[in-house]
Length: 233
Image (tube, rainbow, N blue to C red; front, side, top):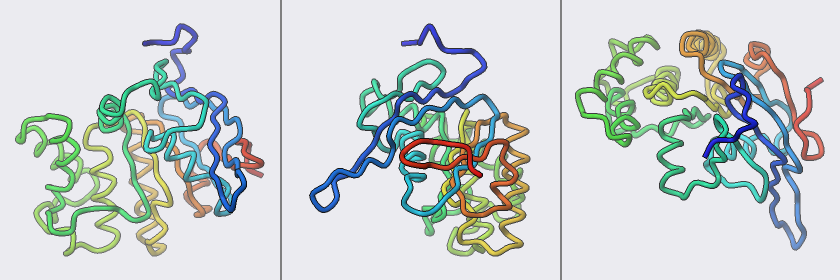
């Protein structure tokens, strides 16, 4: 169901998003009326101290968690009106995720890990394999396609993770501390790949990070203060 007020130049509209938790008998409002628009290919860093709600916001944007109230409109559709099955299909097709802990399956090869979202989406095995090989080659892992994840370095594993996130060419990439476990050299390489892929694929990108070098590459710099999303100083 489309929203008649959806501007064509906006991919995601977040309206009055609220999320809280009960702790020690009291209610803690983490997100308290978040409003933000994200355009196609736009990049946004969310920075700030731990515990202010950065990951909570990212998980709701990625539909991994539901808000207490408010809307996330994706190309005009209120995605939290979807039932769980439809929401899962939407998430797999339209949103890519990269986390600090890459959540790869160590007993499978790089190629097999990257194929999984495509197979879940219903692609034929040969099409899923072609898509996985293409994106793995793009991130520089052609020599490591058939190596098990457990045989790869930390930097290589994180490149497998971004390849898996992008194998279906999603419209939005969400990253939560993606270089948190990488050394400086691997972090810089990962930053370069991330920004190149953002330009090539035209994906909207939201990154939660404590890394000032990564945040500096984003076009917008935001933080969460008193439950609101505001410009970072």
